[in-house]
Image (cartoon, rainbow, N blue to C red; front, top):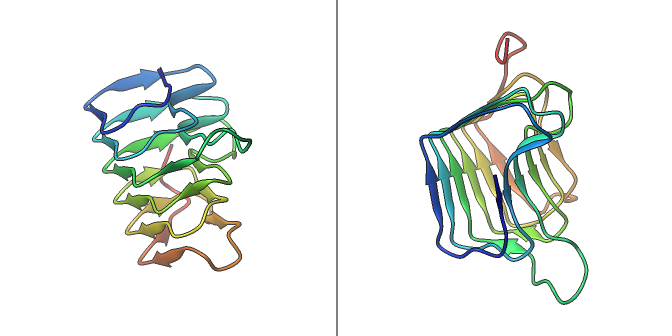
Length: 137
């Protein structure tokens, strides 16, 4: 399910099985909510907040990703935030892992199979996350 440049979009209570990416917020998404979805068996990411990282795209920001289950086939990020994914709220999810390249993101109260990868250089707030190898099958 690719969503390009949407604002204030709500995607709730879906089940997505297989494919490369389950839900992809496109290059200029902001103010959207992705919640209570189940994404399993994707080869790249269950939920991807894409930024295209090149002008003229302003990046994706102020999105809320919560209460989802995102279990990828591989160890790539089940919930992935690109380099210009800033000021998003990622909370109360169960995922293989979460990866963030943006800054100003609030990443809290998630349970991941593998440790969260924060490539922001300290620009994100991570707290109360749990690593549990038994989640995601």
